[in-house]
Length: 214
Image 1: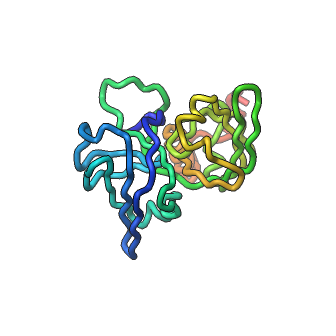
Image 2: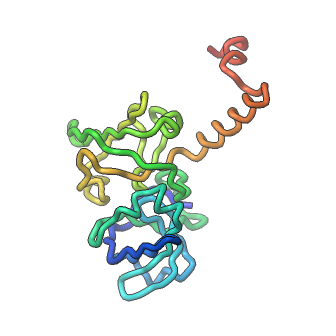
C-alpha cells in the first residue's frame, strides 16, 4: 500500500523485455540501505517487487500484465520515473490509499497555467471515466491528486508548483501517457452495485428516487 506522495524521481537504467515479461533496473537516490529484496516500490504508480539491489540501483521483474496495462513497457533508457516505497504501519497518510495496481493509461491533452498552479487535462477510456468524480482522488503516475473536474471521457487535476517540481509532471506535455489508478473505495462500490443490479436487487437509481434521495 502507498500514499501517492512521491519520495524521489529516479531514472531507467535498463529495461529488458522477453515473451514472458521483463526486468527493469532503476537508478535512484532512495536510501537503498533501508530497502531489502522483496520490498515493494511503486514505479510511476505500478507496484513492483525488488529482486536485486546494487550501488544506487534496484531491479524488479515486470509481468506481461503490467507491461500491457501500464506505460512501463514503453519507457526508454534515461526516462525519469516517480518512486515511492511502501507505506509502513504508523506512517502518516498524507495522500490517499494507493494500491499500486494501475487500472489503465490516460493521455494528457491540455496543460494550462492558472495562477500559481497548472491544470492538467486527461482523456481516459469509459471504464475508467465512470470511476472518476470531482473532488475525488486519483493517482497519476503514482502521484496522489484531487480530481478537479470529471465528465465524459475527460478529467482534470490542479497541480501546485511543489508537486510539479518534485515529480515527473514537470516534463508532461500534450500527448504524454500516464498510469492511472482510480479510487479504491469507488471500485468496490461499483463492483458491489453492479453485482446487485445483475441479481435484480440492491441499490438502483429507481430505488433512490422512490426513497426520496433524488
